[in-house]
Image: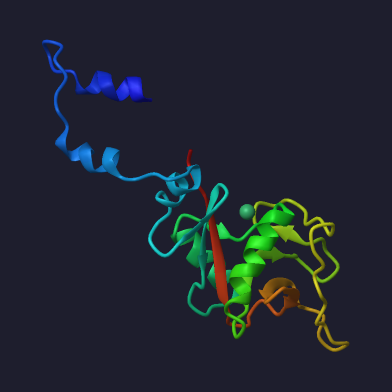
Amino acid sequence: MAYQSELENLDEDGYTQLQFSSRGITKRPVSSEKGVLSSSCPPNWIAHENSCYLFGTPLNSWNGSKRQCSQLDSYLLKMDSSKELEFIVKQVSSQPARSFWIGLSRPQAEGPWLWEDGSKFSPDLFEIRSTVTQENSSHNCVWIHGRIIYDQLCSVPSNGICEKKLSI
Ligand code: MG
């Protein structure tokens, strides 16, 4: 990559052109690998491992929140590891009055819980607490409140957590 950009900077007779615009970038203090990653997330997004997270899309249904994330080039949160879960719980617990949609839903009440990318939810990671009453069994979307993860009616307005992978 660095070699490529050096080639681009050569002018016709082979001299390297000075690129004043790149000075700021090379001078930026980089204290750790994480610092590099976080500088790649958009403003207001939080970097963790190889993803950027946005906590709190405006109140919307699960589908509406999914759409909002997609408009921001991202998807509703997908948790793949206990490390990621731990990070999310920490962030969410700092806003105890709010619930956040995550990217889990099921096509019907007895169907499997699926992430937005179609992969199956693994119950080893966390428990989805059921809030279904006898009358109403259509709690087919999932939100997180503090450290507890519940099923919920998909139409209830809530904030959402968007995630996007960092391109490395
Ligand atoms: Mg993830």
